Image (cartoon, rainbow, N blue to C red; front, top):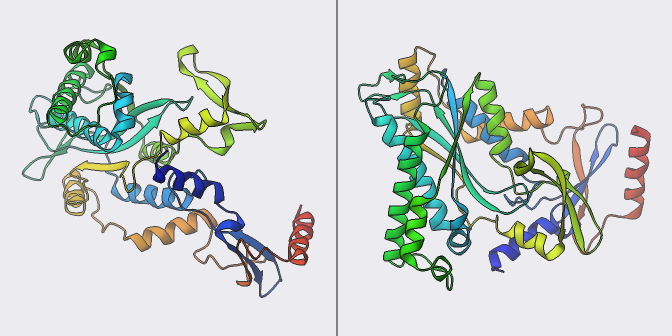
Length: 381
């Protein structure tokens, strides 16, 4: 296990415990007490995504255009799972590049749109049973910007996706395999021992890749912008498994809920040994500083402010400045807590909370304060 995996698991284990410290606050008006433990803020922790997720959703709302949005999923065949485990950064980078190459190639074709399109892509690496299953969820607007700054709607198709699925599959497969072979030729990938021998040699392996059916899955377009945001909110900061899916642990095995899509999406219970559960979970810990959410085309970070204003003007809607990071944070705090002031008393709504005791792993909360908090909770029901 790599040091990065160990640090991530340790952070999740210590999250919101005295190990990371905390404090007890007291209201200066009603004497209400509140105990707060610090969070680990690790992006793989299921408890620490609330504020970041809300800020990101607000950013996406700010960037939405008054057009239909489409949803497409690009999936890597399972034959690449071992290569992804050995080379996660390069393999996932290539997945992003191949998916955008596919959408860009078809959108720039005058037969379909003939303009510069855009896409928001979110990387997921897991299936319901925590096996490795790398795939990209993509949100694509209905049309694109021409070189003259006009908005060009698709020239073909109404209810289906912007482009033929068969064409997307061919372009995605061809581009990914060609660039993967180039990486192998330049010795930029770590090849697992006996990897090609398992497929009776490199030539047979390459032939199998071209013969294999690659999956590009599309859905009907979102009906409203609210549905786009709801979807993005569900998928953007999701981690491999949440606490709500874990049923229990008997000390040796862990039990969690999952859906078996190969059996009519039936709800089932998975039983795994603790070591196997940790092994599966660590497969989905991304490399340090790896960006799992990316924007392409005219909504890329380098040009989004200018391009979105241009697109809104072309679509005949009001042009406004995009929110700053501090504005997004303030709005996110208000949505989550109902106030712009985090130190406001949640009980009387009038006073302010002040720290009365600092907690760390060598300094636990006094028993009398813990008892007061316990009595307070019982009174409040």
